Image (tube, rainbow, N blue to C red):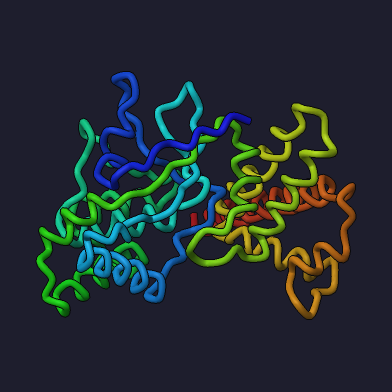
Length: 299
């Protein structure tokens, strides 16, 4: 795996010049298999406090947001955010609360691969939201920052200018499986990995060592199919795996992940993933049949 640790970039450049390569306009993307936005007031307050601290002491070089990991396919114009999506989303929402998110040749710097993208675009472009969209975590975060800025009587433009000067480092990897393994090994600020995140990492890590060189793509494809299938059923991947596990095994008194490690040998991981995908597919098909029956009864 080739890893390119980019030089520190300012936030302003991260969302502009970094995304312009050889006259191609790129953007950051968050694929379906990544967990949903999970930061809340605790993380919002910490990030804002860090920003205000560095703003008050601009000469102390305390304006660094750490690393993010991105995966770039040569044939595509997007950088998949493997790690750091919580920070990137939150920084952009903070920028939106202080001013506006600049587009790069008409493109927003971030795009989601699911239904969240429509909410994100509306918030980024300051468009009217529905009542449900107003309750979305993106909008709650933006409103939280707007309220904080007002309460602290901060100069919005000065704080925005400072935020755009703060720095972050980008780790670019060219292998999707390895990027997920690297994600599992790093400890970055934010919410700790949950049980399903850890199970996913174990699946990738173990199968990488058991399968032939091309086997990793199979594991990744199966996982992505599972996430897409559960998403189509309006069930989170976390909930689905937890329910499946409760039916087949006893949960450990400590955690789902501990039970996973206790019950399964690494040689069984692929069968476990196949079983999850098979059950999810069957449930999805049954739901489709039920929906068709209901429609016929309404005729």
